[in-house]
Image 1 (cartoon, rainbow, N blue to C red):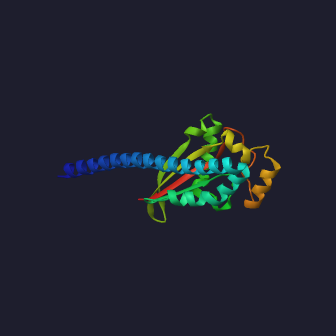
Image 2: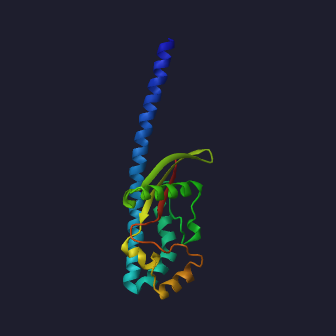
Length: 187
């Protein structure tokens, strides 16, 4: 009887472990889809604004439309946002978990990992509740340096100062980690 109970406990543990791995795989795949949709919509709005009115219009669109795009992407239990070590919008300040992961991302990049591939996910306890958290690095592309680079035009700097008076998101080069998409989902 005792051996049977031990076997059942071991089997139960093995099954819950494999279910956990499957759950993580499913959550990661779902999270990647959420990020992809968020990024596509955000990039589309920025490109549309830039085409209509240049980089200054894109700065304004980023300021006014990005929060709504994040809110629209936050459905089906997901909380979607962006954060960075060098913030443009203080409302996007990283929490402790995000700060730790952002620093890990920088360390991974320093070791040669491509920012396009850098992501991290885990299940954490958030106020006593199991929560899936995931972050995906945002690599700095050529388009990004227009407003986030080392040689930003004075008229763009003026627009940035108007919309983001405490802007720290400057001085990036192509290939740097600009920040990260960050997701949460209570389980």
